[in-house]
Length: 302
Image (tube, rainbow, N blue to C red; front, side, top):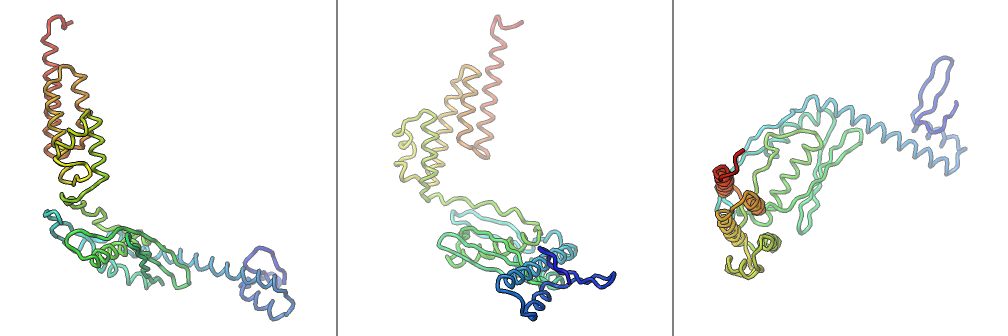
């Protein structure tokens, strides 16, 4: 028998026939011979363990190829969801439930030697879920995701955690398997409670107003309370105030450069929907008015 260093197997030559010997067999023969010291024994054990781990990884990869061939590429939505938000609005969307996702893939998993499990690990602020996919030969892979509790609708604290936990279970499993669902785009966040004090947003709103040239006292006066007490609803009042003031400046503009400066100020307000359409319309109308006046001015032709 000849031994080759750094290889997982030994080669036994018998004439023209070669037979590979598993590292565990080498380890067994070495122990039975009694002529092996502790250091050599540890190396052989490490060699056997690495060989087993490598074989398990290869078996996992080969089984995953077969599994991918049988799994559905996309899971369709099976549930409609609707609820009232805390601000009084309504949220409607459809999605693939965890039960439907598991039902669609579980038989395929077991047929190819796979099993799955979820490991929760929550703290005071975040819900964390790890999905572990294990093959029958011992190799496993994991995917971990985290998110805050889902406080949408009128959920209790326990329901908020359970809702996020279910969502993360679904996505960690699908991430490991490389499957998409027809609802991968989650529903838009619900509107913020207008009575919620948001200090970070309030500081941003104040900074925008100051950059536009307004004094702090005038800004707080337009809202009706000091910045430290501004709620989400108050920030909308401030946005409307600034937008109206900017529109007044727009009407007084005499040059194209002045109008363009007003346009830059409007962008800082992040206007949406009808407010944005109306503001953009008035901005364009002012530009066209100035261009028309300029063409009528004597001495400008040619």
